[in-house]
Amino acid sequence: MIEQVYNKSLLIAWVMLYAFAISLIMARKPYHDSENTYLRSKKILATAFALFGIQIMLQWMFDFRGHAPHIATALNITIFHIAAIHFGAAMIILLDHSYRNARQLRFDCICFIANMALLWPSTLLVTGIHRMILQGISAAIFLLVAIRLVLIFFRAYHAAVRKVNNYYSNDVDQFVRWLYKSCLGIIVFGLSEAIICFMPKWVIAIQMTAGDFMFIYIYISFLNYTLNFGLVETAISEETPAIGNNDADRHANSSEQPSSNLTDEMEQRLKKWIADKEYCKNGVTIDDVANQIYTNRTYISSHINERCGCTFRDWINQLRIEEAKQLMTEHDDMTIQEVALAIGFSSGSHFAQLFSDKEGVTPSKWRRQTPPTAPTAAYSKTDNEVTIQDAKP
Image (cartoon, rainbow, N blue to C red; front, side, top):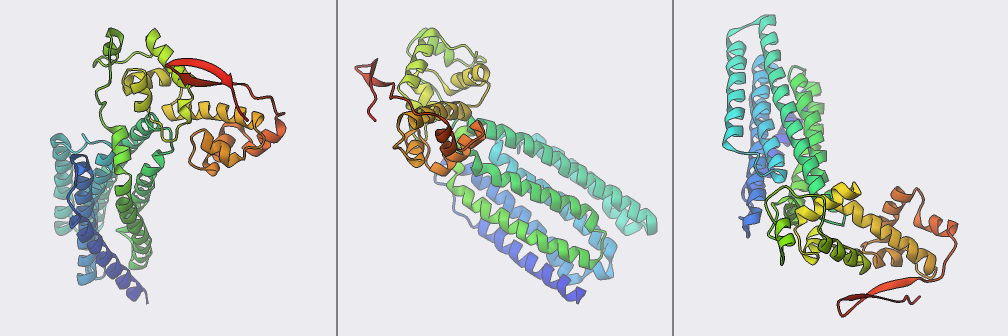
């Protein structure tokens, strides 16, 4: 019974991994240069799937675990080591394009060759407890390599999330959360493999079955990321040239480290941008703000981060929530959904969740607890001047 479950789990795994690898390799070429990074990551991920498939297929065909468990262990460590490098690279370069360089490749190759120089001679030439100890050391080296990749990934991930939250007002960082979840899955799977490769077949069958679901999740999420890659790429890419029409603006566009202080002229434009309630537009980005106050996104982002102590997205949401409070107290005939749409949110549920996180109560409960007030003055834009007119209910 155990033998059958073990063989079936291996068969399903290697067939599925080969199918994933072929599907990714045969993917179309990018239409735009900006997609080259995604295509590169896709090929590396396909290689990682294929490597896992080769290892599992060999175990299935020759039953090393039953006839030569020391060979099975060495084969597992070998493939896990090189596959971990590929999985890590496939995910990291989506968030940090500079990761996969000559120096990094050289370091990975040296670590892999050194580990194999320890692993295979000890596997083929040493016996007994000494072989197990040396293979354990090799597995520990693989663990160190995996941990290093994990640390690099999380550093790149958090940096990318900060950039996304400093570019978009909407919740776009959700598009990279699958990378975080995938990395956690690979951590659990990879670290457990360093131990399970010494275990009997029934343990491996359970672990392999769980691994199948993880691979399916990674594959589907990676394909779905095609729809959102451009959005994330825009946020994490280098600063684009900005508009400037005077000395102060040209200073903002310089390559020097930006200051958190805006010029008086920019401050006035920013105040007018807020007075015009431009933050209530759905999908507003930091480039929109930068273009309207004649600076660049790095400069305005630095100002918001340092002066307000938050990201661009949090800053916009704070403005929107204050506007929502005003609408809810002045217009009790507006539904929560209508309020959410009026201040730039695409759905009432997202607004309600964000409002609850910020205020500690739901919008409906806040409205019940707050007495209504008479409509106040609202800002409008006329002939490039900020004027005040009575707000209509």
